[in-house]
Length: 441
Image 1 (spheres, one colour):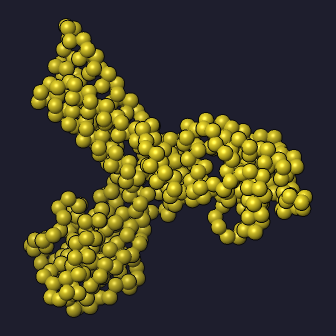
Image 2 (tube, rainbow, N blue to C red; image 1 turned 120 degrees about the vertical axis):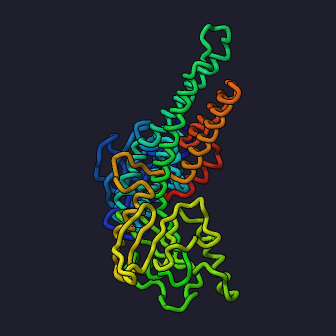
Image 3 (spheres, helix red, strand yellow; image 1 turned 135 degrees about the horizontal axis):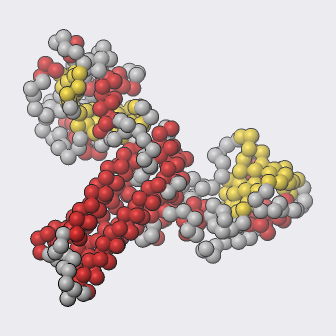
């Protein structure tokens, strides 16, 4: 357990409400609150108490609940004070606490103490913030699973197996006179390949978790008058974008946030991609290209009558895309899907259900299951870095039977996974993560 001073903060949202909660944590929590309520209840039990100021005048009456460390959220002695949700009353209680020696908590300091006292790991701490910020039921359930430790357990098990293989490889290097050449019998390579596949699977699921946490960014791109703005209006179910027959009407990026089967999606309608006629349109095209680079998915909208046309220059190949052939009502075609190509009519709202299903499939949410968990971009990047180290080690083993290099690659891969849970972490990273939390968590 860390040695720290006693902190206090309001744990409920700002503003007025029926109930307001003040949280106190630290070695002197019980002593300080006892001076305010006159008689502290025993740990683990609620009690109704009056809260008094320095002069002995009643501030409010509320419920007091004590948790003895280390069996508390922070791992320290914790007191929760539930009063009427008046900002004035809560501020008076906070001032009374600070006058007795407590200090006001920094953003995320309660969760930070829980992490530092080994009550939760780093990814679980982040899941707390993700759960609070969840905008959909699906995102909330995924964050809850991460908070329960599902993601952490998988990462830890994978790191342990990487380390176990490293120990085996180093044993083979330390005892070269053994009759069995462990590096040459294929078992090491086989185990490494299995670890590689597990990493690939976890990366895919973590990317899905990241999308649930951050939302999906979709850029709608294509030539002028293909129906991009009409598609934005149809999906957002309101006339956000101006729609005309005049090419180049959209000059700037227009964004709308929608929900597709519980998945938060930010749609960005961009300027038509063509040789710009003036400086304003050139700037619109430049912004469209920048938006494409930041997107998770592209909607490439094409007039179905130009079905054979090639994607315009500048469409990034590394970003997944769905080809949307619009205006099928003009050629008498039915709405249908052919792989990553969809044929629909935005005007008649025909085929939009196929498009939404395709989006869910792109991010692995077409069949939601109990395996979903929340994740962040840094988690995905750490997993990808671990995979790169492992694959480099496998290459060295296959090409040069370099067991030493494989062992080092396995160590580096395990270290990358340790950064996810916080077993290996820099103070700067911790500060960045916990400073984004709300005060009181």
